[in-house]
Length: 153
Image (cartoon, rainbow, N blue to C red; front, side, top):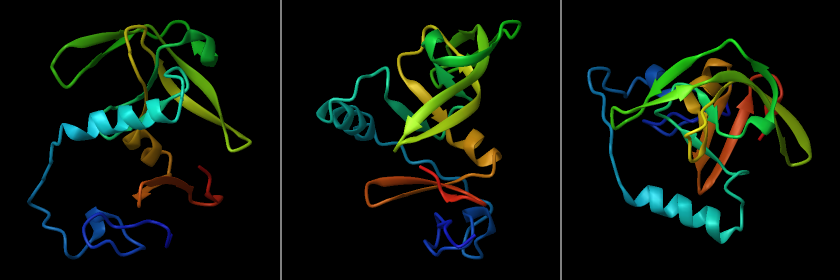
């Protein structure tokens, strides 16, 4: 798994939690409000429709979508709620699978929450990693790797 870059030492081949240089006692979070504006500007400047835009979110627990028509399968009995960073809650009224067509390839994303009040589509970095995928963001480019198929997105 040489394609994984450590966030601490920036060497390939290990995650930050495995890094010998990582201070295991510390848990640092840096907040910079400029990132939100830069990301939104990027989407607008590339004429991406908001319905098609997906944001990688390191803080959300699940993938989330607000458009029922994008789901290929829905669990009609699933009801839940999610707590946001400002301590408010949104209702999850279903969960299911969606298809993303990227670079000529269909990708199925499972366990996506259907949240009507959501303003942006979210891909949970944690949920991607739980499925064995590795995310590398470097030089303004995001790449997602599968352990067997290598680069997939």
